[in-house]
Image (tube, rainbow, N blue to C red):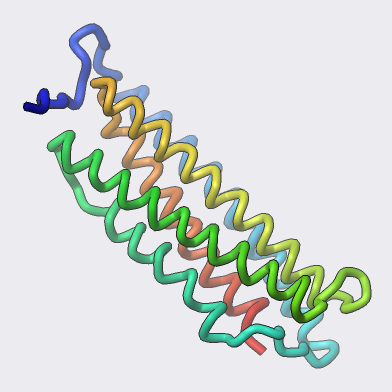
Length: 190
């Protein structure tokens, strides 16, 4: 029989409202800074796209759009409000699987573009640099959100109160989902 997992270990003090608010504000400000960075890179790519024809990527647009599905589903899974530790843990596990699926698909498309279709830097210029650079930068952000979700799942399994952390990670997941859409529109579409 399984032991019931609580949201808070008996030896832990509950975080004060000010601490929770400060962490939330820090997360929002950090994500706002990264949003401005991604948007400025997107405008730079748009400027290059207006100057010269943007060649279509050697991979089908539908295949490039497919990794967005796990991100959107993961965002929906983490957006649900749950107070039961088992449901939160299940949500974190589902999000981890979806995030791993996204990273695997992005890695596969990047591998195909490099090895099978010979999309190379510097030979293919700005389009190749934008494709690889922005895909890698976004992938690192997804990995950071996944690391936070994994850390929260481990802490929750040990009995810690992770409601605040999961709420912040859900915000991070929403961020990478929206940035993926921006990346798709700016770089992947012909």
